[in-house]
Image (cartoon, rainbow, N blue to C red; front, side, top):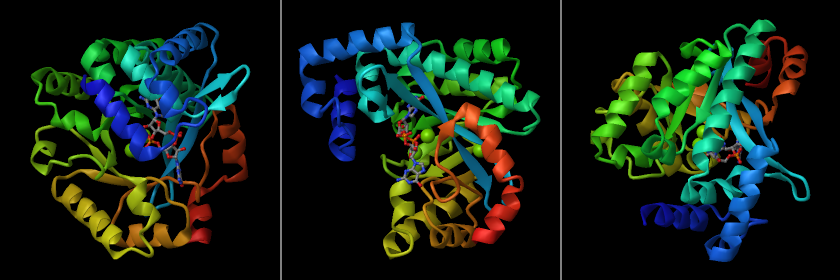
Length: 295
Ligand code: C2E
Ligand code: MG
Ligand code: MG
Ligand code: MG
């Protein structure tokens, strides 16, 4: 089963399981327990979205926010997504959870806009399972209709592995999503199989340079070479590039010099609950100034 293989690969590489260890995840009994807990999490409204700002690297302007899922567990506290999403991808619960994420992110973006953050986009992570198993096009349409958010303010982050699936239906769905007017980006770019030949066939707007390259930009010439290659290739394909995981001024400067278009990371802001965004904006009324002072 390719989903399980994918999950194992992710778990082994990222080593991110703390409460739900890999051992627990692969154990059928515990997996069932986690499935039951995830179902009640959905029913009991235990999921939360945190939002991380994204900026234009040249102007310093705020562009929008990436929505990042957390599970507010009544006993265990706030559980990060990599501890439960891989399991939710195996048991299919990522489909209803992902639908909740889409609706909540669109609702929040519309609320920001009515409160005056007029051009803020929201970026939502989509699992490959949502594209394969669900009618993602109508789910996205419904989330936009219910929230009254204009499609151009919604960005969908896809995984690189999706591009490897030589399935006509994936391509068709991505084209239909583009027709609605949403933006599509490829997350964690450079960590998967990165078939550049496939890239052109997909209606993609943006590549996100994976944070593993950004992390080592200052010290590691190879990471710099990879980041620069991604930027120049993206630009020659008329795609935008965003860097994730920017943690210091030196990384931001190198990325800006490379011509990278956008950035997000702890150096600018950590992901925060949606109701803290207005206050954060008040404390940082001019992100352009904020960035200029820091650069
Ligand atoms: P991602 O989409 O690549 O998200 C970026 C991750 O990097 C987030 O972790 C974010 O908090 C973290 N990050 C941001 N800035 C920095 C930085 O400067 N340094 C470092 N070291 N990390 C930074 P998070 O929130 O734990 O999310 C992890 C992954 O979980 C996401 O990676 C995404 O693949 C997945 N995920 C999150 N929310 C959803 C969702 O709603 N649906 C799906 N399918 N996957 C999601
Ligand atoms: Mg993402
Ligand atoms: Mg964008
Ligand atoms: Mg990423």
